[in-house]
Length: 465
Ligand code: URP
Ligand code: ZN
Ligand code: ZN
Image 1 (cartoon, helix red, strand yellow):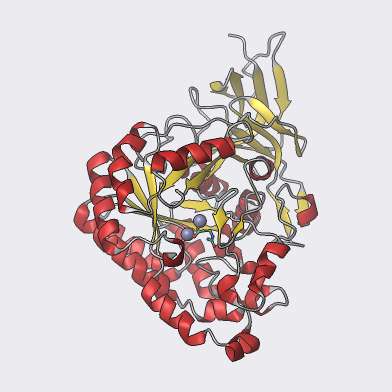
Image 2: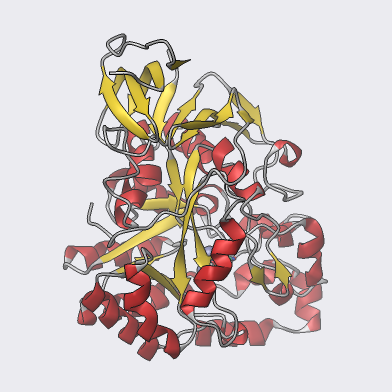
């Protein structure tokens, strides 16, 4: 057997166990995995020495917003800078959210997103389809056939025309049940949230509290009540539900209880909810950290890590990357409701999980692989193709040098964002080498891949774990 590439002697981490071994690649696929020194290179074989390094299946960020028109601006990372950030941080596939413009169909939104990604992305990609109009419901079966089995609805964002009411959530979940799709939900309780915002939206309060009003008007029950309601509609319809960017301990409790009674509900949390708390809003540039939902309290951080370590209530870690520069964030002019909401994160997702998770003794390396690669692949309908290092799988692989730590400086990251929520932190876990379908796109910590290497991935029905 001749191989194109052999990765030799690394410590290979799967979701279930770790071992030292070799990985052989033929074309875009993993051809063999075996003990160290057992796979023999022939004349044309490229060898990559991974001795003393950690080798993981390429990670999958299932929640990104690249070049998204949002809150009067457009997120500054696109499929060029976003996919480079991904690659440098061990991520080999991203899933964006295709949001139809006013009056547009889901199919048109799919075409718009294809035009944004094709020829530009370095890593593989797909998107969830955002249902923002009742007309979109009838397109669900067709989109699933096109390899897009996951849909997104928002319980807030009425002013942008994106909000779903209970009836639409209910009907969508019925359709997910019927057609084997999955509904992703941004769960925040809009009526109460709007009331709290209205009560505090005065010049004197804005002068007094500034960006702190963002967290003061979003108590934990705003997220918890919405999750509770979405779970109820999921339970009675028999649909499959996935709570995106879950930020509260209450949310984790609700998902756990629902799963125990057999409801098909999954959830993700994002890296910023695991390492930042709402004291950031009191900082000089606190408004930069505004995202929806906002980062919460220390008790939430502890509950979310506990779920990641011990439970099934959170199955995936993502970034919700939606980067805005300092200039874009400055649109707020003292009014927190006008801050373009969102944070950069693609470069740093795996480094945060590696440093604050594995290195800090909170989770194992196997759990990192499960949360950032194997589970996202299975839940998002890419099981059998991505998320594992095994024969027949795409050769999406990241290699980490465990001895290398980087002091975060936004100027050295691939993101176009001119600030980082993690500026100055010492993080390990960046990619020494990244391969996407057998092609090396990061070598010796440098992004070398060509734009357009990434491919649109047709996904199957969301799978179980
Ligand atoms: O603040 C955020 N999360 N911006 C992106 C849009 C969303 O709601 O995920
Ligand atoms: Zn959201
Ligand atoms: Zn998002």
